Amino acid sequence: MLIEKYSFRDKPTNIDEEGKRKWVYAKQPHGSWYTLRTLVGWGLLVFWVIVPFIRINGYPLILLDIPDRRFIIFGAIFWAQDTFILSLLMLSFVLFIILFTVSFGRVWCGWACPQTIFMEMVFRRIEFWIEGDYRTRRKLDASPWNFEKTWKKLAKHTIFLLIAIMMTNVFLMWFIGSEKWLTLIKEPISEHRTGLAMMLAVSGLFYWIYSWFREQICTMVCPYGRMQGVLLDQNSIVVSYDYKRGEPKGANAGGDCIDCRRCLAVCPTGIDIRNGTQFECIHCTACIDECNDVMKRTGQAPNLIRYSSAIGIEENHETIWNTRNIAYSAVLIILLGFFAYTIFTRPVIETNILRTPGLLFQENADGTISNLYNIKIVNKSHNKYDLEIKILSHDGRIELAGRGIPLNDQDLYQSTFILFIPADQITNENTTVEFGIFEEDKLLETYKATFIYR
Ligand code: SF4
Ligand code: SF4
Image 1: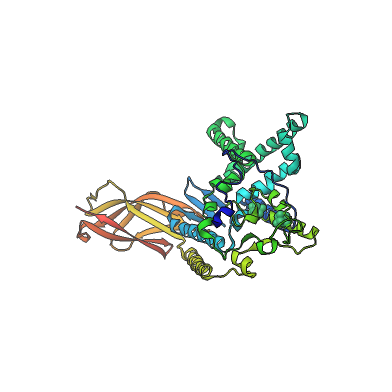
Image 2: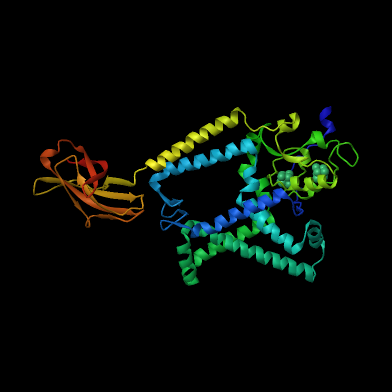
């Protein structure tokens, strides 16, 4: 049978025959793709660090304030009431990722995923710097403990731990804001023992991931990585080995691949790209750079390994557009358009009025009936307001707890008020009443609620 001629992998490359972890000693990449990826990676790292310190109209560029259910994105504030808009944003983001995966494979993983950026651009570079390239590192790990091994391991792990603590604190600023974080660290530790313990636990997790767990996040844990099998097809642009040009491989065997295995040595997930598209490939492009260097040295044309599709390699053409890509793009554009429309047309003032639960009506000596209400007004704009609430549907009056409704920019107002309506105007047990929210004499919003009697 034909199938017996081939051997197929039934386990990840970083696991041995006995099911034990095989440590990947990846060679340090060099080349134009690596330079470009370094620029993109460091650009994203700088963005990630400075975001909590950037202010728009006095608000952080991005703040994910989960306890207060308040999200600030590019200076615009979203409250819990804006769940619809946030869901739309998340949906657009997921679709965007799917569209990109269908068209360009795991381009997100190789170029923008925080795991890859921290692993390849920060932690692995420190490892190269302290312990040397792959052969030296392998030798160092196999050697007995001596002065050199001790100081190198100590230096590396101390730096890893410090970076992990720094990472945790920057992430914390994304959730609580830089000002609150600065206040926290100035206060005595005794006041924040739980917070400190949590911060150290998360730092420990980051340290463990980058010092030991590493590529297993991409190959075993990340659900996105496991979805590649259903998202990729023959037209998807992935890092591909041109087998038509490369085979038969080997020195003087006839193909362009000299079987030097340098593409395998440089791979951070330990795979051989010459075996075709594999779920471990994170599109880091290191093998493209490495093979291009080999091609240059052997005087052959570059890009034996390149970004291409299965069809592109087979038929020697590169195309990325097919019916599925076009359909996904159309859905994405519609969704983004709807998202932009919803953002620009969302009311700047959002009112919520509910009858206070558990309380009945009251009959008053002046012949009126009264109900108690809770009122909540969110100001989503950067303007300040001095608002007033009036009853529009009936000839009644309102007594508000406190004086007026002052609203600062991006503010939340909460209070209670009593609505009095003459008894002769109430004909039903449940009457719909309409309120108006005014700024001076300008009606900003109306809101309907129920008024009960009997
Ligand atoms: S680096 Fe290029 S030439 Fe060397 S084994 Fe890989 S594909 Fe073949
Ligand atoms: S096969 Fe190439 S692109 Fe894929 S992870 Fe390995 S080195 Fe990176």
